[in-house]
Length: 99
Image 1 (spheres, rainbow, N blue to C red):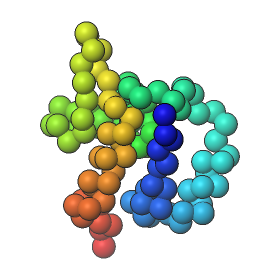
Image 2: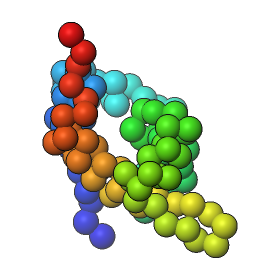
Image 3: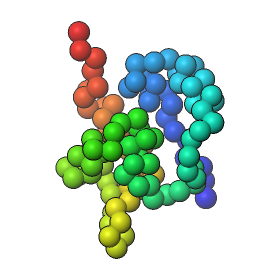
Image 4: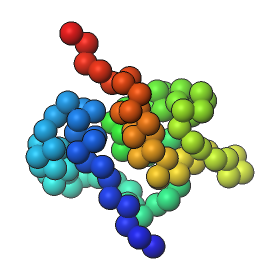
């Protein structure tokens, strides 16, 4: 299975931090729980990857802004949907800093 690299430059731009600072922060983190090879994330795991709250992620799921699937009674978000969501949001101008 090919490894999908996260668009760190794009994420850094969305967060309004330098890519170097973001890479340093990621390198420092040793408490990241979970398996990075998972392809189906819980809502909480997907929210943590983006850095938003669970409630906000549920709003995005309910509105259809982020793809998800039901597996029995479980709701899962495909791992690539997180990257797709960020890429879509960065192109829409939604994350423009307020003056």
